[in-house]
Length: 123
Image (cartoon, rainbow, N blue to C red; front, side, top):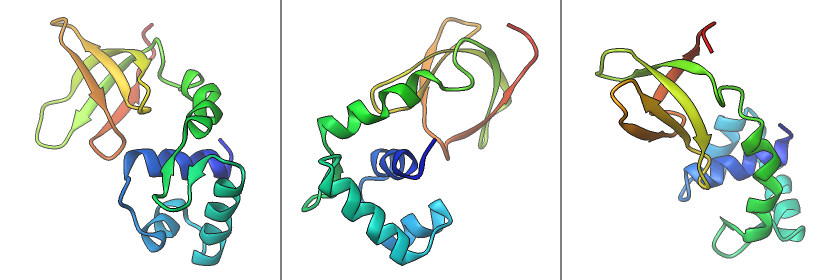
């Protein structure tokens, strides 16, 4: 994923994130984040006033959404405070959350930071 895609994904998952927090999450300098935000706004990928992703920004991310590494694979979901559970990664929703289906048929939409996944060798 390129830097712009990482930036847009962070803005999707953390809409009120500060530039300083973005710099930390992206392992970039504050100046680099400022330049990346300005470039994304100039390209119409974000609204510079609200710092939210535009439809054009969502379209930019679509190829990345489909290339999600866990898509279609059996994974182990390790959520804080819960026992590890096996699930099938069935999709990535429009907010780029991983959609999983557990063995009991229940479906859940997971964001980064909510869980850790282990991709198992089973398919």
